[in-house]
Image 1 (cartoon, rainbow, N blue to C red):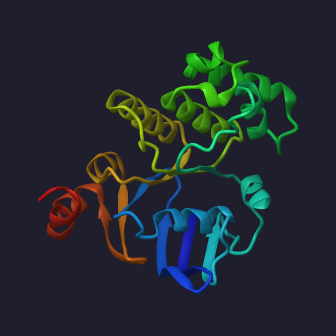
Image 2 (image 1 turned 135 degrees about the horizontal axis):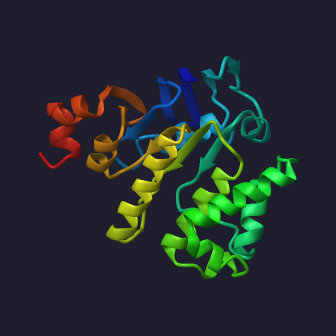
Amino acid sequence: MLKIEGVTCRYGKVTAIRDISLEVREGELVTLIGANGAGKTTTLKAISGLLPPAEGRVVFAGEEITRASARRILALGIAHCPEGRRVFADMTVQENLDMGCYLRSDKAAIVRDLDRLFARFPKLAERRKQIAGTLSGGEQQMLAIGRALISRPKLMLFDEPSLGLAPTIVEQTFAIISEIRGEGTTVLMVEQNALAALRMCDRSYLLESGRMTQSGTGREMIDNPHVKQAYLGG
């Protein structure tokens, strides 16, 4: 479904990722792990059109999207749930979800999808008229996920979904991501909680200092001596 081939991205003169390649197959849950500053978020930005690669190719569902606009990439079926949630803080819950429907015109289907979304996230239903910036961190994460889901993506990109959340909310968030994958949406997730990410994924890639250094199934990565020592506490 998604292929990244030899991608290099820069912020000015600083190279954030260099010559990385990865693949996400349809129906998989794939994770990117690595330390802060390794290039994980940059990789997702390269996929979603927020930071066009300086070199290399990004191909989604057979179409090259290397320098496509973020709007075009969303229209093709890639939704990005960013680090730090990034809800529209001054807008209501409902208005945030409406933004997720921005490229859709099937009004009846949108109503049905919203009903399903509120059934999944009843707190959002209760707070649909509430200003998003006044929600708790966990509620904002649910809103960010809902906003991405309502666009009906084929591939969802999650950037540090557990960041800043209480342990019980982290478990709930990971369970929701697994459910989304189980319902047929392909998932590529960046997550600093390496052990949790590896336990739930099909395959994983390790980024270190902007380069891809290891890859394998979740089990293979958990058993990898380097990964175990550097990222799983020995």
